[in-house]
Length: 324
Picture 1 (spheres, rainbow, N blue to C red):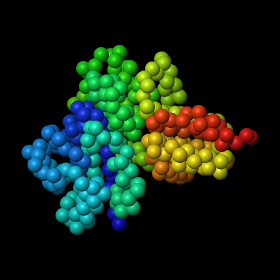
Picture 2 (cartoon, helix red, strand yellow):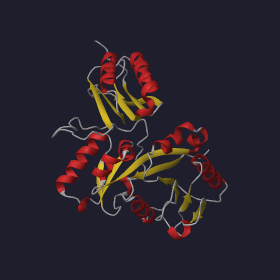
Picture 3 (cartoon, rainbow, N blue to C red):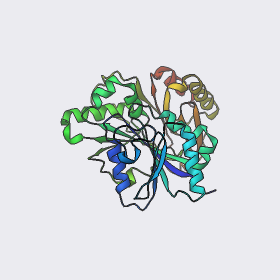
Picture 4 (cartoon, rainbow, N blue to C red):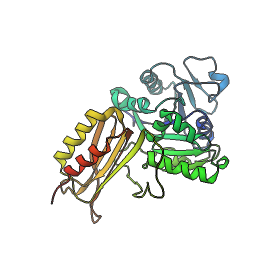
């Protein structure tokens, strides 16, 4: 079996610039063939003339990219693409899925974990979320899906920043950080961003570095009542592994539907290596990370979700720490 095919999910609210960014990726001279899946197409697609009348169609374009419109089952279309690739009927190196602007990306991401066939053939690389600097504040206020798109992101790409007032842009960036402190932010102008900041990010890799600004809520009160937000827990004592496993397992069973992403780099039971924990809703996994060596042992956990039970999580994690 060949190496898993990397997949990038491109999401963002209506008008945020997803198609502009996608066209920019396709036009770049990167030497790769990219299969593009639109899980719902509208008036403007990758190639409107090719896709306008198709309920479901695979089109190989002049630049070697493959464009699919999908109204049916994502599992099925991914399977068909893999079969055609294996048979030599289609050639592509990676997949980009552009989601509809009104949808949460979670069901698409979960596909790569809950379906065994898809998980064997594909590797979910990262979720990229486009944010419209001019309209995002109102969208975040009015649409929980917009908050979910931010919360699920591995990287936030802010479009139309040149059209926003500097103070409004700064306020938006603080709000985005409060919702999702683990996702780096980048301003993009008409989809211009280095490809190495868009592809092969390994945002879902258990061994990816967890880097969260400890002062991410500093500099002002967060007065927005976003249902989706982040909780960051830090500790300088090792966790008791058995207690931690029981507690996090219980949290996931009870609150898993509301837990969008959670990830931690942990010191556990005096183990000589970091323990990396990551989950999506009820799907959770852990693996050995880098050795501690001479580094100071410490743990950082980030939970991003809807109406997080902060007190329960923080108190429970405190009780999971070793006393000596």
